Image (cartoon, rainbow, N blue to C red; front, side):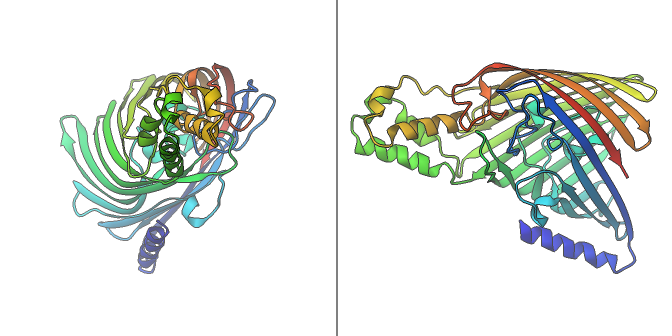
Length: 419
C-alpha cells in the first residue's frame, strides 16, 4: 500500500512542473464528547483504543484536521491528495493520507481513478470525515462505526449519463484496504487487511432526490485468529472426551478463523431535499463466511429542519447482530484440562467481538454562523441490548465478556470549519 501512495505522489508532482492549476483547501472539527456511563465508554468506531466515560471530557473522538490538494493538469487529467490528522495509534505518511489518486476523464461520461480513493460503502463516503459537510455532530455509529476502513488502494471506473430529470452513475472498483481495529480495552491496534475488494455502486440523483445501491465483497487477510482455531483443533484431538464437555468445539474451531474468508457489505441509501426539510436514510447488511463476523443489519433515518442559519435534526439508528450460541459447556470439567478454559474464553471474546446490538435516538442543533464555520450540539440516547456492547469500550480489559446491557447518554459539541 505504501508503494501505491509513493507512486501517486510521483504522478502528482509531475504535472506540477507543467504549470498546472493547484487548489489548496482544508477542513477540521474541534469536538467535545461527554457521557454519563461508567460501564460503557463511547468510541466513534472500532479503530479507537480508548472510550469516553462519565466525568471525562474528550476532545479526541470527533476532532480532526485535514488538508486537500486538487491538481488539474488539463481537461483529461487531475489528481487529488488529502491528508487528515486525527488521534490514532501510529502517525505515518501511509496512515495519514486519506486520498491520493490520479483521475483520467476521457469523455464527460467516463472517468478512471487509480491510487487511494474513498471506499465506497456509504451515502457519505466521500466526506465522512468532513464535519462541515453533514448536519450532525457525528455520523451515525450504527452504520459508520462498524467499518473503520476509510480508503481503497486500487482503481475505480465510473460511468454517468443523464436519465430523465436526473443523472445516473455506475461505479465499479477493485483493490485492497488496511485499517486498525481494537477492542476489549486493548492498548494495541491490529491492522485488518481486506484483499480482493470488488464493488459496485449505483446512484441516481435529481435536484431533490439521491438514491444509491452499493454492494461490496472482500477477502479477509488476517491470521490473528488462526492460532486460536488451531489450538481448539489440537485440544479436541489430544483429549478424546473434550467434545463431551464442549459439544460445539469442532464447529467453532472450523468456523472461527477469519483468514481467506469472504465478507459482503450491501447497502441502500438515499436522501430527499424539500424546501425546509431534508430526510436521509441508510440500511446496510453484513454477511461473512466466518463465525467471527456474524450477520448484521443496521440503519438510520434522519430528518433535518432548515430555518435561516439554523438546522434542527433528529435521528433514529439501530444495529442488530445475529449471535452465535456456543451451547452448553461444562466449565468445571474444562478447568481440569490445561489451557482449555483460556481457549474457551478467548473463543467467546472473538465470537462476540463484532456484535453490535443497540438503538440510538439523537436530537441536535446546527448553527451556521459563518460561510465556512458551524457550531453543532447533539444529544444521543443509546440503549445497548444483550451481547451487543462491543462498539463501546469497557472500563477493564475483557469487561464485555459478561454481555452487559444498559443505557448511555452522550453529549457532543462541535465546531466544524473549512478553509
